[in-house]
Length: 146
Image (cartoon, rainbow, N blue to C red; front, side, top):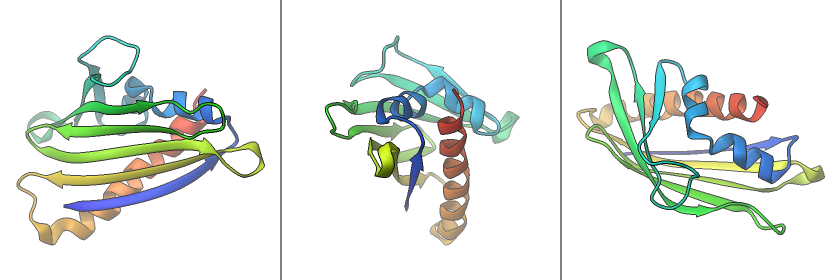
C-alpha cells in the first residue's frame, strides 16, 4: 500500500478548478498512455463509474473507479470528491478537495491510497515517487487547460 498527497494553488475560482479536475475524460488527455472510458452517463454524481486504462498492449492495466462522495464547492465551502478504486489490478481510493485559497485562488488537495496487485512492497518507494510525479503533473496540466 502506498499513500501520498500533494497540494496546489491555482489562479482559478474553486468552482473552475473543481470542473477541470473532475472532468474524468480530460485525465486521459494529460496522463501519458492513458484513456478514460465513462461507464455511466453524466453528469458526475455518487455512483458514477469510469475506467482509466494505462499502458501499452499486454503491459496495460485498468483502474476502475466509482465516485462515492460528490460534494462540489459552494458558498465558501470546499468541494470533496472521493473515488474508490475497484479494479483487478488497482485498489484503494483517491480524494480531491478544492476550496478557497489565498488571494482568491483555488486551493487543491489530492490524497491517494494506492494498492497495486502483484507489486511487492519493496517497490513502494518507487510507486510513491512515480505516483506523485504522474498525478502531480496531471493536476498541474488539468488546472492549466481551459
